[in-house]
Image (cartoon, rainbow, N blue to C red; front, top):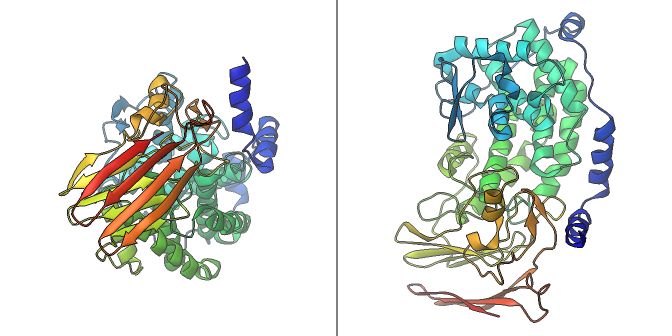
Length: 468
């Protein structure tokens, strides 16, 4: 009992006052919106969607015309009305169904009639503010997908537009101030899309969306270019969001967005540079914190999209040593190898949902092949496997007494956290030496300080030597 209370205390103490307030507020105050019929009758949709979306599509087909959907490597038939909230399926699978990413698939042009039918099915089978589809993060992703699709194919059905307004109103009433991080950014992006799309009808959406984005751009993107959740996968997701906001500004020519577009481009450019340095020699992401290949847009797609938006990123020969001071990673490039070392702290402190107990872990590529990698992420939710994947033993670092360096628990929580340190002992023309340490095991014994020394030159790397 005392252990559980201690773990809870060390988890809750990092929350912000805003998170605590909104967690209580949303427990008692639920969203309420007009009925579809009232929204349709009271809205003038003549000025809706005065732009045509032309962004890059990177998703593979996820739903077939036979009503079979595949998410997270699991296939299911979605013909039945109950599928949207089917308790026999994993919650994350159902969320993916509600996102409607299939509207942005590369073959969407060939399936307009099918998608139109599926969109109308969702509207008819998901009453307002009920079920998985009306949770704020789900709303955010679907609103953006609906708007991009409707704009591209000039879909102006009044019932569809009334539903889109309903969804925007529901999101306005439950922005994720209790969660923050990438969820709140997604809320801001969705409301910005909705505000621009609805024109005069969307003024309040645009105002709230830009208010969120202005604050979260400053908060979430660090000076070295990294997204502050320190996951190369989520960094890629966030970069795609930034690029789509830039696309929205350039496509819609909306004055308030154009005023911000150069700042957004600067953030995107720094973010792309950080991402490139965190790639393996196979040009795919490294596995620090929650990460897996095939979930976020690929690095190649991100660089392609940036080039289309005229964001110049020169992919030059990397430096022998790069220190990402704010995000907490060191990258060493030899003539045949690349090593990436994590000396970051749990980030951000108030939202560690995608953090792993991976202090001082490293990943190594040589001759174009991955040699040492962390386990990555194969699932979410609360399970023994999820807890194991976040644990220290699944990473290239040291475990003591089968205890994690940071106390990860319950799928997305962290209690006591390791503090990491990095000293650059030598960075001469032909040699790099790093002294690294963390105090995550000092809670077992104050003398337990995990220390690693990395020594390398252009052609030789001594794998991290560990001391206690």
